Image (cartoon, rainbow, N blue to C red; front, side, top):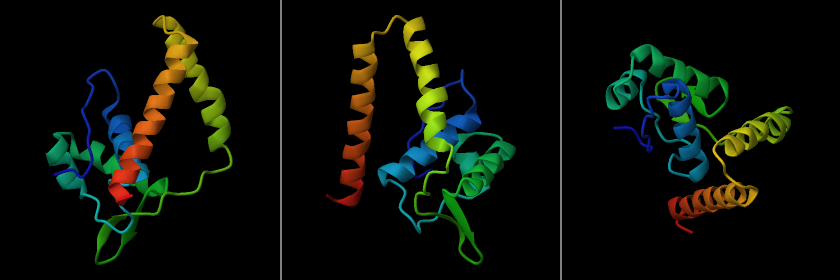
Length: 134
């Protein structure tokens, strides 16, 4: 069993979807620091993905400091890492530009986008509060 929610979309990279779902679960508090993260094999079986993809996901999450490896304990959830120097700039320039282009492409208004971002933000905060017992 995978300790986070994911619904794989066949039109997107499985690797990116699983990395995103795990990161989201950590930020929301569904996966807590110190908890065991599924092994590569368990992840592959539970999600019905290729073991190489599962291995790539785990290695990426370790490299990005979302997971840590402890000898004798396995792969554990880490404290959410601090942002790196270019992370904010990338988000606020490149990622937002992609969102805006896609929103315009599908006919969404600025109000639609702002409402959707606000809803997602609040939903993640609520999930975090529930996970932390607030």
